[in-house]
Length: 353
Image (cartoon, rainbow, N blue to C red):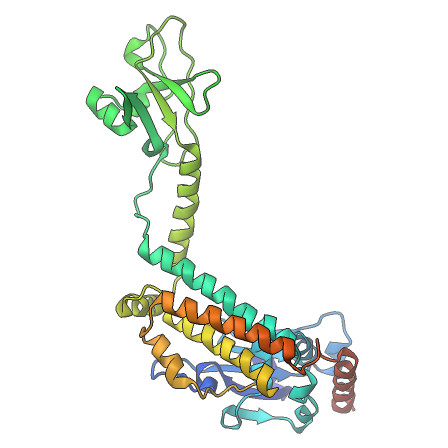
């Protein structure tokens, strides 16, 4: 089942403009996202394969099968609750039977976790982005050699410095373990050998560890070296994460982040506060306000008016307030699953007649 097939066979029950345009937070550059609900044909639904959602390649058009839609509603999924409460001017088509899915049937204290909890995870995500922007990783990858130090006088120098002073190449050197000393090695050079050759400090730029060589007894080490293996492992992880992020990042949003100079994803933080405010409104008013009355404040966040530290402090205060509100709220602990299932069955039976 594809979007084209859903539309061709008139299976849509709900078709809405969603995202920033539904929130009233769009800019001239904003895309138009579409979300909705569809019904599988009776024969397909009772068959072996169930299609829970269809979407296009860019995921700016997503449609949920009726069962999947109700399942996410009872879980108080923010995107799905927003879809059910889409403002009238953003609804392109709505089958009258959708009136049976009343918002009050689904709102519960689960919204504290799904809205506010998700918002908190986005704050952590923004912090991770902040770290990547403030601490960029050079494209030229470091190797094992860059994490080695040689004992020198009463201190140490980098292995690269020691190699340069002695006019050595790491490929012409070799290491031998020092007993009872963790990640400490004796260094030898090919010039000391009568026969054979050494394996080098490491096998190359992609090596995960130092290389060990066999050395004839009686040779005196030229120096002793330590390898910061833990530091190198952390660097490799950070390098991989950073350059994967660079490859996948949204360059337009990244340039916006750099432009406003506050070193956080402003759009991400704007939606973080949108979710927090919506969680608060659900506890107070018992409804989902998709169209944002706090638009001015949210757009200030997007434009970089606040520092990252200010927003984190505000968010923490908001989370504390939300905790108190939900403790006093009249909302049920969770939606009435039996009632939701009854409505789902009723809708499907009516449409399949």
